[in-house]
Image (tube, rainbow, N blue to C red; front, side, top):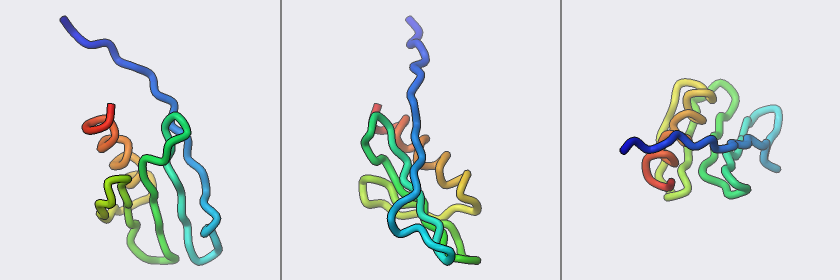
Length: 76
């Protein structure tokens, strides 16, 4: 039997640390933070998972996709 695809609402919010020199976004599912994407001005994007694992990405969009993939793989 095949599993059905579930629709999950993902929310992206700016954090209090957001400024002109820092872009910081939280990725939430069901009002729980599943990861954070942080990019200082003209630097690499840092992806912080809720399991306190840290990786880098080329773009903010790629970082958000990495967090969602990690959530789908381990937390659903």
